[in-house]
Amino acid sequence: MQRILVTGGAGFIGCNFVHYIMGHTSLHVTVLDKLTYAGNLDSLSGLPADRFSFIHGDICDSGLVERLTAQADAVVHFAAESHNDNSLKEPRPFVDTNLVGTFTLIEAARLHSTRFHHISTDEVYGDLALDEPRRFTEESVYKPTSPYSATKAGSDMLVRAWVRSFGLKATISNCSNNYGPYQHVEKFIPRQITNVLDGVRPRLYGQGLNVRDWIHVEDHSAAILAILERGVIGETYLIGADGELSNRAVVERLLRHLGQPADAYDLVTDRPGHDLRYAIDSSKLRSELGWQPRFVDFDSGLAATVAWYRDNEDWWRPQKAATESKYASQGH
Ligand code: NAD
Ligand code: TDX
Image (cartoon, rainbow, N blue to C red; front, side, top):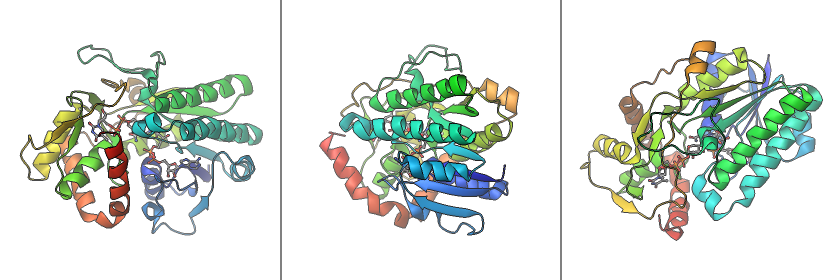
């Protein structure tokens, strides 16, 4: 494997993966990205020109996708509409990109017999009760609840069907909630950090009791590379770092890092259909591929993330006002 095509590489996880690949392999990376509101070319600045190229385009453009797939040894597919709140307001782009876009890519990978890795989410499994001991495994039943998670579940099913029906050389990973640098200010952790930096109190949906299973984005990148190099074709791997915390607990830690009282937050209108709890059992990935998370201390990963947003206001400032006015119209 020498050349990979990375879709959605100007987004949060995609750009972190590209930086990780540059530092940990000698692969050549081509990024295909539509540069929606969530894509930012500044996240890819400074990469070596002899190992990196950027193509501005849509994963639903079959001609373009076929040409780029023909030149790649593997496709790593991150591109998606990724935000639940947006999917509740306007689901159409989620169907187009997450379903039709994934279909377009796997058709090209089938045509050229190209190795394919599909990035997905734990949200395809629905949610868990707060007190049940069960966590999601590769055998959990698909029960998506939002337009976002339904389209991600559908895209996983397309990939699985293409493996079985057409022998597509694909793997799938379903990861828990990521945090770290370059995450759009619409998402929970960057929204609250940048609100506090702006003198605005963090805003917790409902009572703030919902639980998410946090993983540092660099640990996610390492897991994807392990799957790309050693994963078994046709297999699904769950990625998680045992990072379960309530949203309220995350906000309290953030406030401490930002020098504010632990209760300086507001409770706001809940998200419709808000999933209660996600939790990942990543035993298969750990035992079969030898992956382990490096960022096991969430508090220090969070402190580093706070410092990144403090130091990189130029990166996030242009998106902040538009993001907050969208939230204001949703009562959040
Ligand atoms: P993001 O919204 O930050 O980035 C998405 C990127 O895809 C952007 O650069 C955008 O411009 C691009 N894009 C969107 N539509 C496109 C299209 N039609 N053609 C080409 N490019 C397009 O998302 P993210 O948080 O980095 O998530 C990346 C992937 O990881 C997604 O598939 C998401 O479902 C999955 N995932 C995310 C998380 C998380 O916590 N953020 C957790 C598990 C899985
Ligand atoms: O202002 C907020 N207040 C709040 O309480 C925001 C933006 C969110 N929340 C809550 C909702 C969730 O319980 O915080 C939690 C995290 O919210 P998001 O950052 O919107 O993430 P989530 O809906 O959990 O989905 C994320 O993880 C799985 C990613 O956005 C998905 O792309 C990924 O698949």
